[in-house]
Image (cartoon, rainbow, N blue to C red; front, side, top):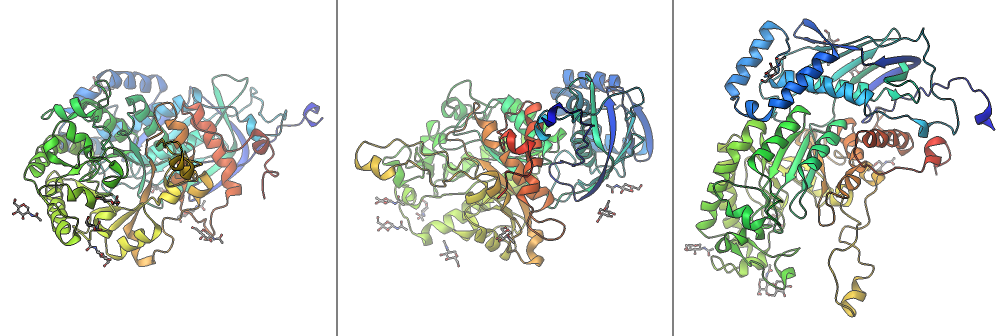
Length: 612
Ligand SMILES: *[C@@H]1O[C@H](CO)[C@@H](O)[C@H](O)[C@H]1NC(C)=O
Ligand SMILES: *[C@@H]1O[C@H](CO)[C@@H](O)[C@H](O)[C@H]1NC(C)=O
Ligand SMILES: *[C@@H]1O[C@H](CO)[C@@H](O)[C@H](O)[C@H]1NC(C)=O
Ligand SMILES: *[C@@H]1O[C@H](CO)[C@@H](O)[C@H](O)[C@H]1NC(C)=O
Ligand SMILES: *[C@@H]1O[C@H](CO)[C@@H](O)[C@H](O)[C@H]1NC(C)=O
Ligand SMILES: *[C@@H]1O[C@H](CO)[C@@H](O)[C@H](O)[C@H]1NC(C)=O
Ligand SMILES: *[C@@H]1O[C@H](CO)[C@@H](O)[C@H](O)[C@H]1NC(C)=O
Ligand SMILES: CC(=O)N[C@H]1CO[C@H](CO)[C@@H](O)[C@@H]1O
């Protein structure tokens, strides 16, 4: 019956920004916004006004010409252009990364507010009159001022941990003035991202969006600098459109790293021009390859959205796909039974004492790394799940003894480290290289943990920098069930109900409950750089990729950006996070990302019942 009464407009008054800002205040005044809003970009104290039409025109021009011209710009030119902008103040120049980042963010702000927004009916009582009325006296946001307090570092398109100040402030008055300040262009991007989360689409006032939260004051900055997703494009191939959409999703969540697990034993989709046979024989199919231009395009797309791409070539294990082109480099290549030599079919690992393998790696990295280094500071050397059984079949070694294998792995690592560093990149490795094999590495090597919380602690206690990603919490593939088939009879009965090794599925609450800093003494916390959620892809391809990742990855995004604990030091509450995450899910859907629902509509319409 309540729906039939003419209820006055009910201001919801709940700020549903995801991830939650460091601190904020909000009110319950209504403001409108439409396409006539001006976005003024003030850079190093000079101001210029920018109308939508101009932003559109620029973007179109930029899109028409993007990949080629930018790839020809050298670091020196970028540096020169950046200092020129600093001394002259801003203009519509789109040749520097800083201005491209901000122009892209402005264009996306319009697109999100007016084209990819949603009506929040799911978050109000059924049939309630929750929308404000647009009248001739309604107040509009007429001006959004972006103020960048400092010039970007010259490596804004490939920052090292700590190089970019990602903080921002956002202020919105009841009179409709919006000011976003930030130290960097990425901070402005994040401020604009937050701004879009304050506004909703209106059912009947087309071309407008509204907020009922003015005035708003927000101060925000990340807790941890490395907030990533590990995407596996080797078990199954992902088309470019999926990778772009994934970067969109990461950036909406203020996540800033895409770890691209591009090759594995099952396939080698990466085209290496100096060794064409690698992908010609190692890809699943001729149309499932990433060209150098594709890789560059992914990097550029990421750089514009603050998402740095760290590519991984996993090795010495996980390399069977190299054997299709270079069988002489791979021990236990396609050996059966595969489960003696690898955790998944097919078996195959680099021979650890052959001269061919270092020569191959030298050529591979000489080809690949100089192409990656203009747009990244990182390269992942892999190193998980080394099989000692495979080394028994490796005629250059014929041993499974730690005392024999350890020095060979150390030599392997030393060579790889030297070449990666010579290319100006910082290496990442999986935790086994340090914790199982005790390899010695430069202390700034980033050690990616996955096996336990204890490994994270062991890494930082040794003075190395750690990423978290405990598979009991942050593996998004878990709980999907087995992909292995079992023979009828005992084998099948034993395996019933065919659960996978890391079952059950880790729902968002489990993901949300992992505190990256838990158990780490205060003086070592600076060594925890952040973490990554992982989407291993035995059973995830273009059809279900986004459902598998979103919105569960948002939960990790908030833990990494806002911290697992609230300002009073308590674990963040699921009860307050859940409706906000549901709204975030609606935003992702409105932006074309097929994210799963968090709760049934009954729960989001009535925020009291679905609680225990
Ligand atoms: C938010 O936190 C910052 C830094 O701690 C502080 O300077 C600012 O006053 C706070 N703002 C609000 C609105 O609480
Ligand atoms: C930028 O500078 C203004 C003062 O001019 C300050 O109020 C604001 O907090 C600064 N923004 C950030 C993100 O540091
Ligand atoms: C190693 O190979 C032997 C057979 O040579 C097998 O019995 C054993 O289970 C294998 N070890 C692992 C870890 O698979
Ligand atoms: C590695 O190969 C060299 C050259 O063939 C050989 O002398 C050495 O014994 C091998 N090392 C191991 C551990 O097998
Ligand atoms: C090494 O191989 C021998 C002989 O196959 C086996 O008995 C032993 O368990 C293996 N050691 C390891 C660490 O796998
Ligand atoms: C590495 O060190 C740990 C702890 O000291 C030890 O248990 C392990 O056996 C060592 N592994 C190797 C390969 O030396
Ligand atoms: C807070 O979360 C941690 C896991 O990060 C858990 O161990 C702890 O018990 C939780 N504390 C409370 C009071 O629930
Ligand atoms: C407004 C503006 O400077 N646009 C430029 C953006 O970049 C393209 C390609 O370099 C130029 O042609 C435009 O003039």
